[in-house]
Image (tube, rainbow, N blue to C red; front, side):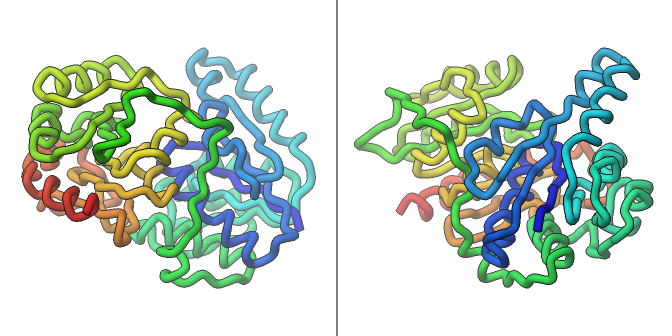
Length: 331
């Protein structure tokens, strides 16, 4: 059996989807799995032993250049990916649904119109699955795959998953400590209201006796990292990392602290201790709590169907609450 999974973006969403790979192979080791992803996230999937082939598309290039010709060329490329027994769209957007339908297969599976953010996407599938959009995203992904294959995965199996991110080579950072616990701080996220204030992250570093490293991905995040360092001691700002280097670095630290964003979810994927900070997004949907993967959330009520990007409630999270959880995990 040969299947194609379509999950184009974003970093955290792809991580949440990749957990299905081990359960597909557990169900049937002979299944061949290919993955369709946006070119910018190709590196996240590389080196995974359960992925046979990675197909990339570059829709962002067509959008950036506003070129219908580039778009058509990318879509033409999709039709040449080969023949599959089933194509599973785990994204649930119109763009991913169109790509899924263009791949040659008798079955195109996705969530039904009541279970996706863009309901029109469901019309491109010839087989649909109903599972609430407001349900936990990791369980949604696994249930969709289970429906398509006729398999079954328990919550206990999810909690006891094997780590599932792989780096091509080990990333060496001379600032990793052999004496103190290493904590990786993630100041940035996809939009401002997701971010915990840099001043409070700086205060956090002064409450825990540990070696702190900070990662960043763009200029705004680098400025936040520099603000944290200016107000704290024993803090190092990492160079800008590739996705592969980021996978390797996270696997070497003792704890990751950050908002609801890709690198924080990568810690969960690698079975590394983590604290995910939630403000404008729903923790019950976007995280999977385990003994080593914890959350600290604001008290605001969140509507997963309509995220309020002006909700700055993450700023109200008490630094001491984060410190308390961190010390529990480090002990």
